[in-house]
Amino acid sequence: MVVRRLVARAFWAVSRWKLVSEPAPDRPTVLVGAPHTSNWDFVFMLAIAWRLDLHFRWLGKKSLFRGWRGPIMRRLGGIPVDRDAPALVVSEVLERIRSGDVFGLVATPDGTRRGHSHWKSGFYRIAREAGLPVTLGYVDRTTMTTGLGPTLELTGDVPHDMDRIRAFYADKSGARPEHRVEPRLREELGS
Image 1 (spheres, helix red, strand yellow):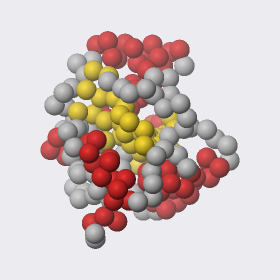
Image 2 (cartoon, rainbow, N blue to C red):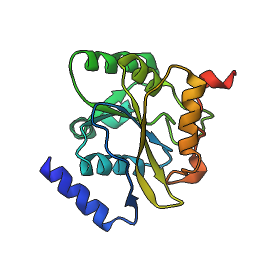
Image 3 (cartoon, helix red, strand yellow):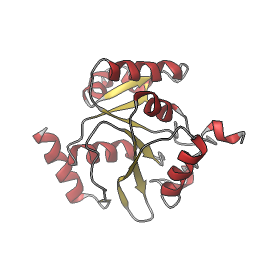
């Protein structure tokens, strides 16, 4: 842990980006990493978690875990996601939590970094079913800031909860603004 904090301090000391954060959550949470527009988001996520000494696991596409990268990604807290079976991901994460594995979970609900009209709802379902709050993490190129925003308790009223999330992300552009996806779940598109 000491090495991670030192690496994170060095990163923030030389980075053009500034870490701006509300107080770190004091219990496990689902940390939303958005807007997810660049591979740099992963670096920022690690630098934030390590600097704030947070114990997080993160979801990543299973191709990141193939070959020599697999052990590294797992050591960094990764959980492989089979995008063809998203319900299995939710149930696997919930099983880990129910078995006593205590961790925060980083999820990038934008899914891939472009070509989507909505967010994936796994983060929401995991938070609701596990009774975890949602912490809003962000990257904003317009201000060159990244960090943690508020931690929200979800109510189960999807449009209401997503309105609060949209309000927070309204002025956040991501590292590559042209790839930003509006925070909206598929469940809302019909309403």
